[in-house]
Length: 216
Length: 301
Image (tube, rainbow over the protein chains, first blue to last red):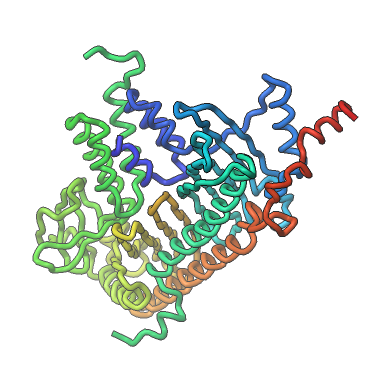
């Protein structure tokens, strides 16, 4: 199982859907573990089972009420767990290419997907909230002159907080997620852009740098 | 052991294993192979998959192997392959036999005359090799390069066409820092009667995997040309063209990065909501979905 997770860490993120289904077919006995531990791109479905869900879906997509995201889609699921608490799962998906209305137009393809899972402990003086967040990002530019350029992947972080219930679960969880997404966004900036760009410049330093080096 | 209904055939498992190996990021195929061995749990299948996938991976990634006795390096590419495990190293005129799965040289011998290019072609190749070597040493901290004759190696004199492949590879593997990357450029040069046709393919990839899995995958093709001259002049001309295009590509990568960071990323997720303050979790009632839904449906009020 560890080996399977190791493979998922190395395979190019753009192939992650294929890789996961390949692993599930190679290791059918571990399929539920694999599916629950490996984050996959979010599928958007319009659910017409119960009136409320349907409206929720439609509403999030069209209106600007969730002002974080210009035209993002979000869903929330909650279920009880075995420890007298419950688990909440917040899913957010934003497609930058389609909804930017060509305003900035650099992205041929751009996807932000966030999965936040909060395990909420039993209610007490303070309640323990355990948040595991994964953000998956996929960016492809379409500037013809530079060929293809694809930067994609995911990063994952965890945060645990003990908070009083005075403000209510929604407030506590909302703040945690907001803080976490802020941190993740900054990490992404450093990791996606910073580290990979650093690698490129290490492989072949820009000409100005090279000129300054003494002739060996 | 009872077969499960959805059990894959050995052939299917092998194809999956080969897919994983072939898609390994630069410098990571051995790690992937190790994990795959665990997952497959079938050494015979593992050996078959690796023996088929490693050669493709090695040639596609232009891996560089050290020659025995530290006499230099040999690049493993589709352009200098003589037979499945044999590659020619023209700078030192040697033929190297390798073990693809171990990624190591097993045998070296001097090249026979008929395996090398004709003196006429070799003059051009050698001059170009020297210029490219100079360029790579100056532009790449850890680059390796070679020039191979891929067509027309027996050309005797002017009027006969021939073709070279210039291969430049630089890899930076830092598994302890969870970061690996590689630069590969292949330049195809067709020497025709009065002109040289030059086509380049540049590929860069980077993989960062501390607490995540982030990969850059970029490539670019370009074309150029120049006139047919004496070997030394051709060499200088070609090297300059290569130097120019590669520097331009690097600049455009930097532009892509700064555009992505400044503009595009903002499209996906702002640092703060439009209201420029953090979301008022206390007061979500001002954004009540239920109230708005009620309004829309004309219920309640």
